[in-house]
Length: 305
Image (cartoon, rainbow, N blue to C red; front, side, top):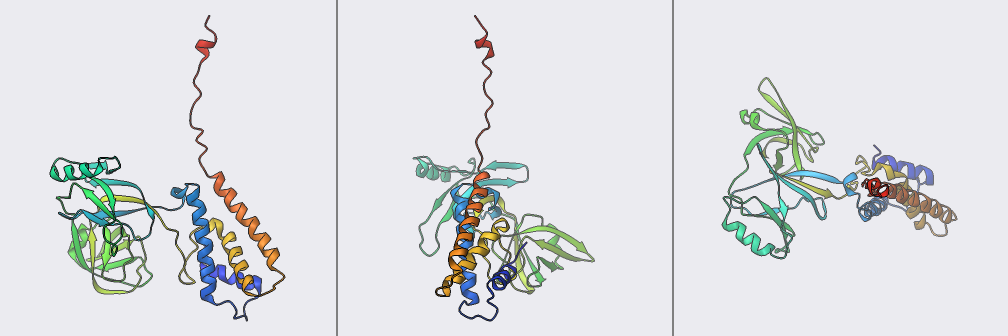
């Protein structure tokens, strides 16, 4: 997959910017982000986010805790599904959407022992933002294991000698005071000579050396539409590789705009329009046509007398 560093190098080569200083690396990165956001918006407008951005994270329940944070990278609070998973008990957690949802939420809290969970979105703290409210208030707690772990920055594994690591399983939620990205989960675990190696879904943001890492059984699978990744450094990948041509052309045009009276601007603007239309056409072709009904057979009526 193409990284931002590779795409930036192509722009610099094609515009002969190696010795120029009128466009800073920070500005160029900003142009890339703008292009990604444009492509992201087109995907959302056509309602095909699940083909690009559908993600899942675990939601560890805690006893008597009813409000839970949304994923930090969720797009527009778009939750597509919540599923309760506890051994052989599996059911969808439906959203409270009817006109009596407030009464239903209150009633559910009074009958917690027999009620299946449901949820709603609340936003009653400007410093916290929207939260997921589970009703009835959970009367159970996810299994939680705190292990002393070590790992290297940019690597998606940690190691530990703790015997409790044997209880860690795939899809557990992983968190730490530092170094572990949000929405990280366990992919797998292996053991050799008493040392456990735990593979994570995300690479570490910083090295760990004997740091406490928390592994929590999620109980709730939270499916949601995430934001497009935007690069921060040269090594970061372009999140929508199919549209890297559009992103590169967008960056080129914005760079040329910085140089006053550049005669190449009309030409590059024309190229941008072409690749932009190609991108939108490609996306439009991916929209389901809803042609999923079989025509009813009416022959029995057509030939009867």
